[in-house]
Image (cartoon, helix red, strand yellow):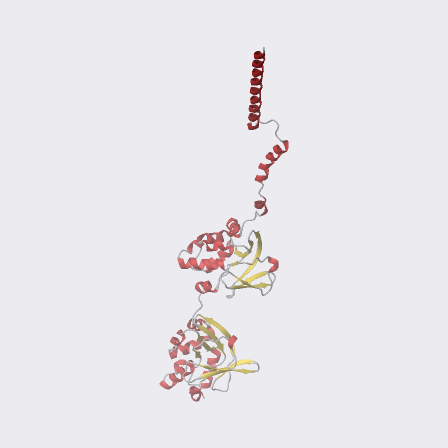
Length: 372
């Protein structure tokens, strides 16, 4: 009897042990299964909201404006300017993508007007040599102001704007807003195309040229060319031809005090009936006097009117000088005679110097006795 009870107890114990193992196995299986019915509802809401938060892009929505380069390339009225930008290396493109810039953008009509003035250029594609592309790059950079966003209400009379080629533009306010280069080219602001993400672009009605480009496209005439082309210097030209002295005008940085026709006519009045024109200067003495008089009008130094002050000036005639003197609060020229020469026109610029037109022939001491 005791043995039987012992066997029943052992059997009961074994079944209980197996049942415990079964409960442990079921518990482990439930914890590993992703389909747990007892998930936290707050966790479920959080997981659904997470994808929506990841798709938000507040930084991109804050700035939808194009930069200056993108703006110009997309505008029909700047298509010629865009073609010029595309024809160049990335230097100009990089400038137009810098922060805080101002662009004075010439319209298509502005480029058309420029092409009408240039003999060898009718489209941007005509800038095909390296030297020409360098000129084109200087032109475009002359219209870009770096590190300075200037809106239309910030332009003021006399304001100096430094462009990216280090040449200034002056602002003029006169019934509109104008930009003037040192070579007197003038462009008017005709429309604000709008702010861009990195500054502002203003439309203008002319293409502005820096001096380096202007001198290539529109070279100044030489001293000789100015004298030949000016009708009021016709008799001075005749004198230089007679004296064979045009070669003296080929130097660099010279000054010519050029007597006008009326001044030369007064000389013939002083010389009397025997002298009507320069063909009457025939013998050696007469030609030498004419040569001395003409050399006394030439100076081997460029002297513009802004440096006029009382001073002696050496001429090309050896041992001869003229004087700038102040009379009646006016600068005039003193020579060996008693009559002062006054200025009719100052600062006629040439590629190799400057011409001042005067109302009297200058008489050096060497020629004074002959004239008297």
